[in-house]
Image (cartoon, rainbow, N blue to C red):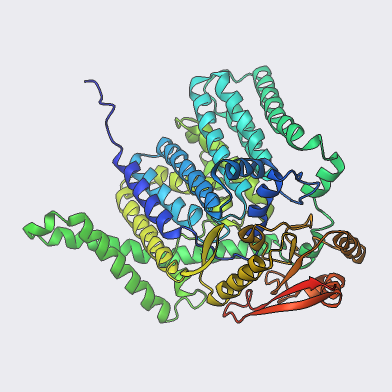
Length: 587
């Protein structure tokens, strides 16, 4: 019988409904509007104005996302909402590719479960670690390219056509051009995945030429665009200093921010695993109970709503049980929000997945999508090795781990697969409901003619709105905003004269660098300085101010300029609590 092309994948439809609800609820909401977000939104317009990345605008990240976003700003207009649309579009593409890959590894029902987990925990949310907030679009472009590369690897493994291998190699190069570590991790995963489990000739000579082809094509895909976009105007030395800022990173290294040791990593794994072992059996038990009750009750009207009854009953009773267990102090180590989400952090699954691969090498080689599985494993290990396999920036580094985790459960379970699917669904729906509830405080708008975002901090919103009004009425064009908050440059369409767009610790590392910065700023026609004096909360130990980190610049601002406005941020959040001071040059 001929299959109808109109056949609908109901599980994909459910994924898209889920995506739409989350996208609508999250539109314009930003958890940390002060920090790196400004760098992402001010860089593309500066490139459109003729400035050159790494020469006129500093960045630690690869260039592809900035130039593509500049193109979108040129086409669709200078507006913050254009960035939201870019993030949502990339998220949608990633969702469709992710679902397709999950369906190859599992079935449609489990692919749906895996994908809505990815949406709830990785893709959509107000945090800078998710996809749609303007924080690190380079990573999001790289994620889409990585998912494309995995799709091409799978096609090559089954069909053996060199075209698919070339496509995967191009995706590797472009991923590196989006965010450096993704390119490296993806190249490693393509080389290993296509040389071990590919279903065609595996002699050493073929493997050598295949690997050489991948390396050359991916290298060309990285080098050629970089040369065209950047290297005609920027020296290789400038490029190296920007993309590998080792000296500028020292203050962050000394702070302990990157201080992950094997012992600390194992402790993090154990914490996540303990939460899973403590809470997931409760949810599993409740799901089994609800299934038993649904069979016990035989009312006619109930049969039509059997699945809905089981689901709602499981969610409500699970939340109640977990609340009381947590309240009775069996798990004092966790907050209730942590305890109610037993699969919120899957870092602990990485060593388990690796052990499963090592112990089942022969079985895995006979799985239809063995090359895809191995590529995902290598990618997961390489991309997360920088944090010693703790998925610190979760949404941006967890995609491959999520696919492997659900695939592992799918492959090792048979009789219990249905009940585990229901239990995992309950976990994800509880987490999704919690995320939607946590979005409700984001109702305080920071608005201008060039866009609006919503924050949960009324004090920050008030201070930002007053600052925007002051900049607009001053008719200033050249405005230096530091150390944070240069999203205000975008919202007022003012230009920052500084090469640096974010003054996080280490950007100006020494007293000599501070003096050079001051001399450079004194040569500029500065209209205003906006000093967003809030603490750097990520540094250890405790909080540090800009005055402590760059005292010479701080002194230059307050002694060489006239204070004209102050707006206090009396925030309940310590990282936002501070003051915005607006200075003008002395006449």
